[in-house]
Length: 507
Ligand code: BES
Ligand code: MN
Ligand code: ZN
Image (tube, rainbow, N blue to C red; front, side, top):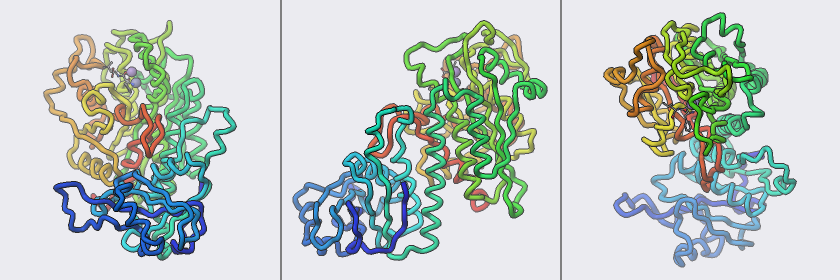
């Protein structure tokens, strides 16, 4: 699918569907002064089509509500075969998040109709970098389907080949915004495709190989530690998890070094949990819903995808990604409850529950990142079921040992429309993590499960500023939305990319 910027005006565009954003009234209680209810993104559209726009509003067939659409065939006065009004909600509230969703929903709706090409017009104050970038992202994200393994030949029939974004002047800055949106959304879809792969096809070896291939394509340095190297280094916590699987573990390291000397010595680490399948191990999970545990490597796929975008967008900060990749299986050589392992950091851990495996592999990964000289750590992990109990599926959880870095991450999420919610990390929660036989147990009690998981991780960052994102709540969508298919979301990747891009600006 190609997305092209054009300065051909609406009246001259020859296309199957010409789309104008059409705004609606603000809800009661909102400031209505700035919202003209019949305004569209094409000046003089109503007059050009003989008053049709005001007529559909007046007939109350359309109110400009978000994601609503209405279609006029053979609009007189235009060269397009159809005119589509895409409801955009109140204009004063129309920002990048709204634009991203609108674009996704619009693309999915037109694709379902069998349309293969359309044009969207942005005139006046709507032809901004922010909207061009967000619309581009929304189109690409909306186009993703988790059907890579379906063999039905009909699948290829409904496909959008080309989208034109019509703006008054196709300037270099708008072209750059389109390029950014494309890079970011394609990276997010790359992550989603990896997350969607079943565990028989995406083993730790295959995940590491996918990272290596990507790194070669985008000129990143890639280093992969194998089992022997991890034994040598003493990754006891990680190796305890992988020992039950016939699949060998791999530890992926991807390095981005800015070409021009960076303005600071800051070195950002992106760390992602890569459990290609989580059976729970000997503390085995119930079979219902276990198939979804193929998404337990979403954190790893997210940091690998983020590096794909970072390699192209070239922020001024140094960034290294670390992705421990293992499979958590039950077998005659699997780790048992009660086993005690020694982490790379040196602390001993009593494995009270083999299903709390993510924190074990992250413990060694976080320590490794610190010892590689990283000055700031962000990790993403599908760490606890408890996070979705607390937040539902709208927010990912944020846990940190550093308020300043935490605020930066939350702000990056806000810019990108990725909702993040901070949890308390009081010292007293350490009382929930007591083992009689080792330095730490790998689980707390019944309460505050996402917090105790994070307090466990905190032991391995050696007081380096660190933010943990628990994405178990947001990485997978059980039912499709108008703008997104069901399945892997790739969420938190844009927060990571944004953080790297804006590092100096917001320091
Ligand atoms: N991968 C799971 C967490 C998870 C659950 C992710 C549901 C996505 C959806 C993690 O390894 C796990 O099993 N956590 C346990 C921790 C418990 C044993 C303390 C959990 O959440 O039940
Ligand atoms: Mn588990
Ligand atoms: Zn897990």
